[in-house]
Image 1: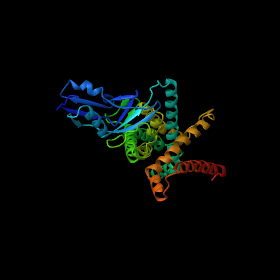
Image 2 (image 1 turned 120 degrees about the vertical axis):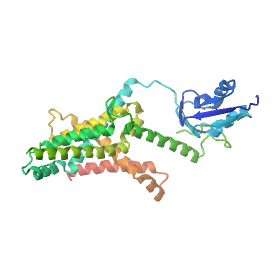
Image 3 (image 1 turned 45 degrees about the horizontal axis):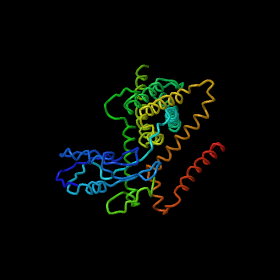
Image 4 (image 1 turned 135 degrees about the horizontal axis):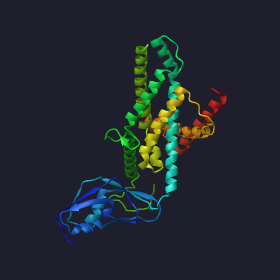
Amino acid sequence: MAVSHDTVYLKGDRDVEVQKTDITLSDIVSLECSNKDIVPKLKALKIMKIPDKGKQRFVISILKIIACIHAEYPGLEIQNMGEQDIIVTYEEQKTPGMLWHIIKTAFVALITFCGSAFAIMTFNNDVSVPKLFSQIYKYVTGSTSDGFTILEVTYSIGLTIGILVFFNHFGKKRFTVDPTPMEVQMRLYENDIQTTLVEDASRREQELDVGKSNHTGSHRN
Amino acid sequence: MWVNQIILAVIGISGGLIVAGGLFSFIIELGIAADFADRTHTADKILLYEDCVALGGIVGNLISIFQIHISHGSWILPIFGLVSGIFVGCWAMALAEILNLFPIFVRRLKMVRYISAFILSIAVGKGVGALIYFYKGW
């Protein structure tokens, strides 16, 4: 192969999903090079072949990818602008049943609805909100509370406002442009999962890295 | 006396606001709903789940404060029991996870091999404990 003195820039996401067994460079990372002639060749460069069917997951070190490129283009300078370890998940894409998706969503919606209803009721019971309210009512007005006063009504209004402000949206309508707490939580959770996958693979020495025998398919998660 | 009513209203509103902030950040920051969304691969629906948490809180509060009667509602009981049980189970475990219970026990007791048995015994223990608690009427 021709010796080139160009620089190629790689940028990869931490988590990549593929649907075919022959993985080329463009499946894992996006790349840029001043020499436009070699970009298509680089994109089609084979990185690895997933040995058998079924869902499986690999962690590839960027060094391994660079080594694959260097095997073809020895003089090429490579700059990695993205992640250092890339999780590749292979999954045969079958269109998941829409009905099943709806059932799952409805089930989670039911759990979260009843769960938080349960949580607020146990909270009210636990800290004796009704008792406290009648005590406050008596203290402020001097007369005995009948259990349905302005205090209970405004508490419910306040709770509703508080929840909506906390979640920052209702339905499709957002109150500010910030992401909602759950969106933040979801990303944090994904980040934790990815970090765990990468560190697990490297601790068990199953990461596809340079200087190791490249036995793919000996493990799956 | 309208002054008293205003004082009560201020107490009510601010009490509700603070309770909502405290309790619901406790639910969300433990990441239960995010966990559900991840397990069921329905992360695109998290806004809906958030609405459900919000609605559940609002409706549950109304029911518990005003003792609202739902007529012909006995069929709701087993459903509500099951799903709120699932929710509380996940909540309790998420709390244990946040407090780093598992890493500490695994390290201290050098449990490396039978973690799944440990998890199973926690689950069964919680279930049996709850049953005894309710059966005995404690």
